[in-house]
Length: 249
Image (tube, rainbow, N blue to C red; front, side, top):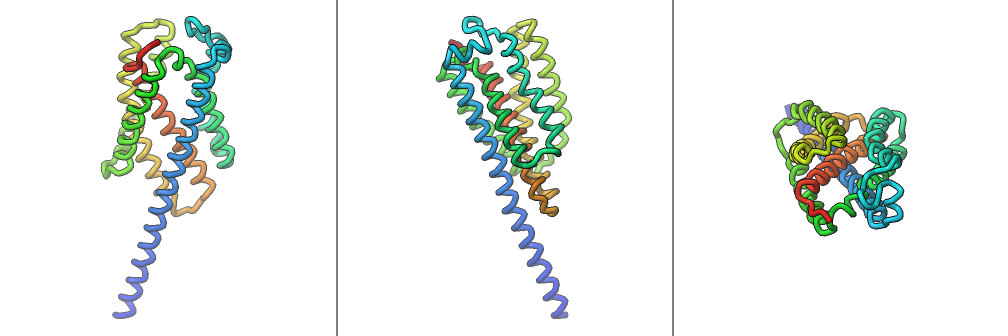
């Protein structure tokens, strides 16, 4: 009986140690996700600021007076969307280092596509909306990480919403309707707020499901993909909030 109890105690101790190891690994994984995302955000806003505050550089992509994109501007506008699909398709063929480099290249291109905001909106309102977005994102992501509620069912509805937003945004490029733009912005904030919580929980669950395999290469690439997902949630929420509350020059 004593031998049985000792064996069971040893088993429980080993299980507890393994759980602690997974918890520590999860914290490191999420720190890498948020750290990579933060570097990408910094790169995006540095590029956007550098181009947006330089009339000569901005003129390469847009008309300085009307801010209408030229041919190169249209390419830069849609390049991030194309790069996201390309990244998702090629992630299995890339190394973790290659995936990280691709993400930073994507963040720089995104900065080019967003550079016009530094001409269209006041610097104060950009900073103000960025702060509001940061606080909202942090709260939503924290809730998604800590909640015991399974919100995986949100995924299909939110993705359908994103597809609807993309289609409506492309159509409104040609219509130029302020009412449609307002509706898109309101729905966009709600959809990407939901995606922030959903993606955070999904990243956490994916790690927990694969942690036992000990595949460091997969975990490295998974962190980059997680950073990309949360990066897109933040950027889109920021842009929709800026459309709603930003003060125009």
